[in-house]
Image 1 (cartoon, rainbow, N blue to C red):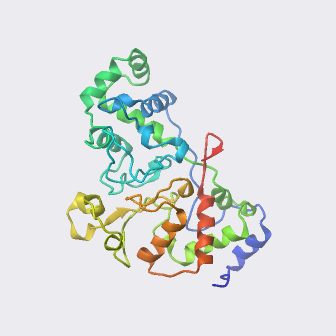
Image 2 (cartoon, rainbow, N blue to C red):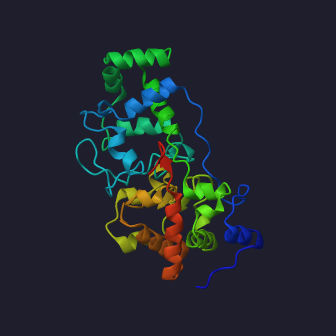
Image 3 (cartoon, helix red, strand yellow):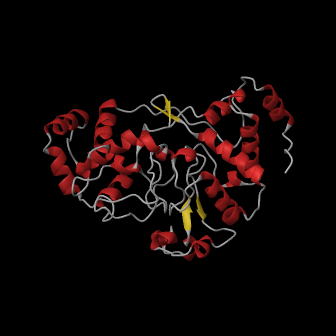
Length: 317
């Protein structure tokens, strides 16, 4: 496919590559981290890495949401407290606070609720709050720190709250694409800019939109083809939101994932079935768009997606 024509205003920036005012368009840079209570954030950080939240002290939040792996896992399916695979691929914890709902099937709205589900899950942490609260309260360091941060001390609600406070600070700022949106148009190569253009023109942006470039709507997996019939070996998790609502229109419907840091969070999809970004893009074209793009266009889109990798603690993810 020949290069697509750019609007005049965009073409001038495209060619000039000059620092300019923030670009107007459908995608926005990540916001600045929220101002949080530092004591509660630090408690949340410690709890996030504490395996005592699991029934047998084997698994912490960080075991599956690995901050050195883009906040996700490098396995198709993470292993629960009993060493068995969980039902779906672990999504990234980075920028999760910007999603309109949590989990692939969107069954809860808040990070606090998400923590509750994971602690109780018989395939993930397999614990209960009475046990968790007892363990944390028996730790003198935690007992003192909780009393300092929360008037009511160690409680289920405060543990959930501290975890959520910490997770709200996990924003992967300063991706090259965010710098581009902020006006530094020279930060992207010509091919990366054309990749963004293809991403819009093919319609990827219809679902991967908003500040999180996804995470703000539900969509059926297999709009223009039966992905599950082609893949085979269906599982209950493949039903997606149907498992939550029981509504036929929600069969195979999932929360659209954020594409931020997508280049460093393989494997892809709820089933972890695609090991490469190139493979994931091909699946999306086949089953969501019903299009057969040129290899050049797919390569350009992949180049664009790699510009969405942000930073954590001053280093690229």
